[in-house]
Figure 1: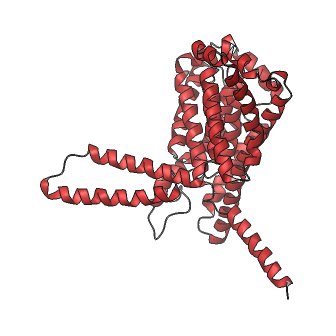
Figure 2: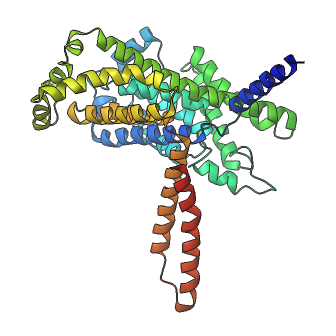
Figure 3: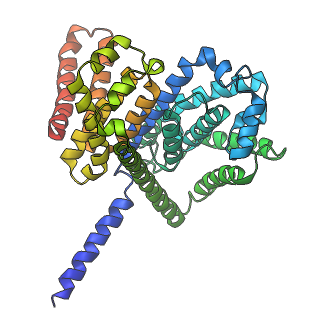
Length: 413
């Protein structure tokens, strides 16, 4: 008689766990924040290096096309820039990479643009692996996981199109009832066929890309079969949540390994590591700021030991939400300091964007509501002034809109 409640309780716990694992809304805001952050930073990098693109990745780079091809043969890495060494191909690909970053930033056809974003990141990074810092590793890892996430459920053009879809309810897929998505899928298939037949694309990369393309065809082919559709949706939800969990695990391993390796170094043990790092001439964009920091021994000691403590303790802080939020804020401050003192802005920004996956859902929802309220307020301010008859109605609508936003912001805090 006593075993039945225990069995029922275990079954309900298992049901809750499976329900959470299959719920696509669990980390919807976190994945969207990572998507926006990574796409925006990559776009910023491409724009910042636009005038030097030929010297970094193009035909005029010291790391020539033949050297890059030899390195790719040894590492078996992937880069579409290997398909041709012409200047026209490089320029077209660079502009397309920027366009893909913009599309992913806005959340436009993310099921396709996330894969194209991965191709762009891998291609530029593997073309010349000697010019970027450790930030390119974070870009590669995060871009792989973004392919498997549903990172456009909120804050995206896909979400807006899904809300405006005709029918009794919102469409479960942002690409349904959409000819543009079909045309994009067909265009990608023609490009894959164009590079596969001459042998430019082969091996595991060809299998992976063709598999993703075929997966899109299967998804669109089962639209009229509810059972198969629900099965594929369940698989997509599991992949989404699993990819977000893998992002978290990857960052925990990164911080834990970095912290434990620091402990083994003598400069980190005696508390002078920050002093020596701030004194490197080639990593000193603001010498006055670096010298002011290194001149205070107590500050250097606190930053050195604090860096190790935060990195080692962060994976364990996930057991407590409040401690995790405090350590996450300290990690943000650490990355900002690295970007300013050591001149590694893209590394710092990429780490901050990846760490957004740990932000609380309530905070992200409140931030989105505040941003939406600000956008609506700016849009109303740009409209022409209403006449005397519509002034009172406009004021009432404005007050009602603010009343809808304010309670949710206060509740999340």
